Image (cartoon, rainbow, N blue to C red):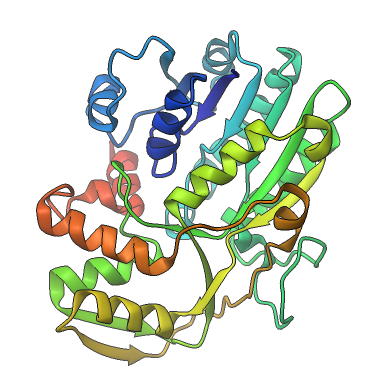
Length: 332
């Protein structure tokens, strides 16, 4: 079993990944600011891991090297999820975003190498590709980022790959947009946005519609990280993998939401967001045997049920929208 540091372990993906890693017997350190929780115990209780003897919670900030060193103690594997996530949040304050997403990540990579971490898994993003006309967007295509968020993802990819060697091994994962339920829910990613709107307003506004949006179900996202924890390190060292190739247009996603929720009005409007790409995940499928097991439709059904039965409460709470929370934090 590994001793795994999950940065951003209290975030959207981390809040599902950490309990799964613990259930498999791994020792897990969660390193997070816990901005989206009352405190560390609120997080642990909500995600169902209170009292787990293999769990360590470290409240800290990537901008502080001492916090990073504390979190790395005893860890041989790092899954680096933490960042100011999504374009609107990243654009609120360019200096702050650079300090966290770039400088903080560089400090983490350097500290992990110094601490003799064996395996470093970096969560990049499929948004690094920008707008692509190719039928299949593969890992070797030119990267054309459109935002600071995706530009910094590329810079950290390059920095990590430059620092890797035979003793400090690592891999870059470029996930598609994650969708579905999490205890630290997000309603600011495309599938979740449309589902939330359908259930709270009875209306879906489709911006554009023809743009292709690759998505990955939360459960498959967790499985992908676990596959990289389990894979022979020599097999994945210095590799870059796309993951999540359920490619659908925004209009197709909206139509699935309408089918699942029912009794929803749909309106199509123009958009100034040109991002469109058809992600190909053949590489991780062929090299690691990783296949998707879940679908966009499943994530919509799970969200619908969670919103209707009260598993997700206060549906318009700022906690579920990154940019709203970040604005509030910056004011403080």
